[in-house]
Amino acid sequence: MQYNRKFLALRDLKKAICDRMKKESVELQAINMKLGIEEEVIAPTMAQDEWPEKRGEVTDEDIAEFEVILKAREKAKRGKNAGFGGGEDDDEDDADIDQKSDTKVSKEKNSQRNENDPRRIAAERYQKRISAVAKSDLEKRKLRVKRLILQRRRMVIKENMREATNAFDKALRTLAVEKVRLDADLKATDLRLLTLAEELTLLQKFEATENSMLDLRKKAVDSIASLQKEQKDCRRMLEEKKEQAVKCQALLQKYQAQFDELMANYFKGGAGAPIQAQLSRIYNKKVKRKRPRNEDEEENSDSESESEEDSEDADQCPMDCPTDIYDKILDMRERKADSEEEMAGILKARQDIEAKFKSLDLKVATVQKDLSKCERDLEEFQSKKQKALNKIQLNVPLRLSQIRFLENGSMPPDITKGLILTAEQKGKLAENLVKVEHEGEQLKAKYAHLDKQGKVLRVDLKKKQQQIENEIAKCEDVQALKFGRKIDLNILRQKTSLDVLDEMKRKLAMNEEQFHMTLNDLELKILQARESLSETMQKNTYGLEKIEILRRTQLDLEEALNNTAKKINVDSESGSERVLREKDEIIKLVKMQESEISALKAEINVLGRKGGDIFSTQR
Image (cartoon, rainbow, N blue to C red; front, side, top):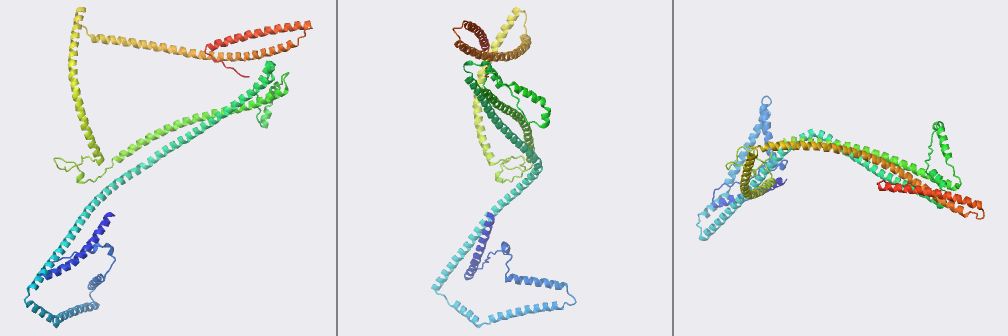
């Protein structure tokens, strides 16, 4: 677009120059006539081809010229059709000839009339008389001044015409250079377009395969994202189940605390230990919950219902136990059973979620393998496609100023072995050249330093070699004195090293076997220790439960003993003897229980020192 605007501006400039030079050429011709100079003055003109936008404009002269052309064509056609009936054409031709002859005659008469005009003849005679009169000095001076002015004006006009012509030629040359540059750019664009067309054709061949591979990769990525989302949901559900389990565990602990509080409030001071133990068994008993069944299932499960009724009948209120306490315990057992059932459901759901999470992990690992394989295939495909694109030949237009391929001061005819570099790459090469020169200087300095060290080391090496030779001579002398001959030390070293290696391998094998046996023994001991630990833990738990029962029995006995002591009748001799006898029996029983408790405590302390864990259960 810039070039077109410049071209149109130059055309307008040419039109203005032509119009001005036409006027100046007329003035120059008049000046030449006055000065008596015969000079051909050619005024510049513009061709109609330079104004393509005026092709539709028609002047009267163009119409007259076109009419003449049409008449000539019609005349040529009539000439081809000459023969019978051609008299009308001959008449028209005669009419044209007569018209032309009349026009010529009228022109001659007008010229004769002008020559015979008396006024014209009188003017010519006056001019001759005036020219015959001698001119004065003033007139001559005026004529000379006028002539000088005309000559100066003639020079100015010619200089203006020359300057305008040179300026136009300069602008035209500049525009021509720009046109050449644009032509080169257009050619380079055409070459680039051809290269891009080849690349497009090649890429269209690879498009289907690449799209299929990208689709597979996208599917794998989407599936991984969906699986990870499911895993996130599983984690969230596991957290929710964990919170629900914590709440259920808190409820169970709450129910246990309420039961313990109820037992502590009712059985104060350890009274009613048997009733308390029976109520604890009733509270801790696993209750079979009734599930809704169909009619067919109810007919087929009569025996099961009877067994459940028997088990329910087994839960009876203990003797000397208030009914409201028993009802509260049953209600608490039902609520505890509901919480336990809920806890079991939560644990089962959690196990299912964990199983699902593991299966999702396996699926993610499988899809990850597929994605990795797809990535490798896609990378191989991309490298293959890039190799195919690299085989396309590129046409790079270069200017002569850009070529630095010279041989003997001139450019060779064949530059196919040349290397094309960008300006940035050329700058980097120049920087690298400076770096290489600097590194070369550093290496030279380093080489000089190493050369000095090498000389010193060579001197030391010669000294060491001389010492080695002296030592070898001494060793040979010793061998000659001791063994009577020279012995090859390399054979001794090789034999000794082989024996030592075999010995080390043998020891290594023995140590590995011994360590393997020791490891097996230790693993067996670990298993036995674990079994022993489990048994000890069970014994400790049983012992703790027994201690708890004995402690409560002791409390009950002490309370009963205190109550019995209050009811002793001092006046009745037989009652006092009975009381004393019962008291002795109770004291014996208490001492026996205390001895058992002491033995159990001693056993627990022994187990605790051995590193066993002791757990207590709440009833």
